[in-house]
Image 1 (cartoon, one colour):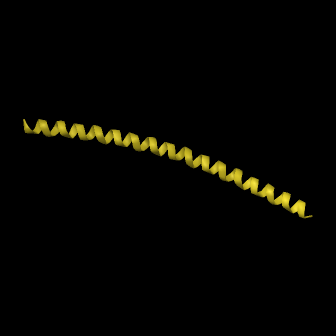
Image 2 (cartoon, rainbow, N blue to C red):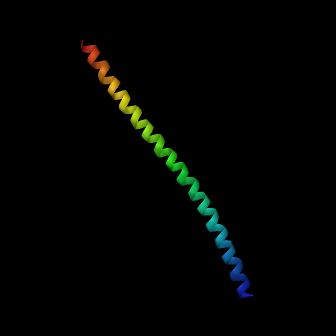
Image 3 (cartoon, helix red, strand yellow):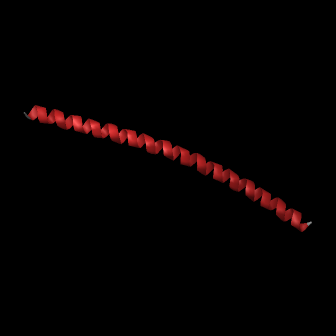
Length: 61
């Protein structure tokens, strides 16, 4: 009886761990997407900053 209960508990723990592992993988994938997006935004900010400098120089002329 105790062995059966232990087996059922272990099965439940394994199911829970598998679920959490899948969810963690999803979060990691989303996190990578966000990091790529942040890098894109940083690059766009740099381009905008450079263009703003050019605009300011042209205004001075």
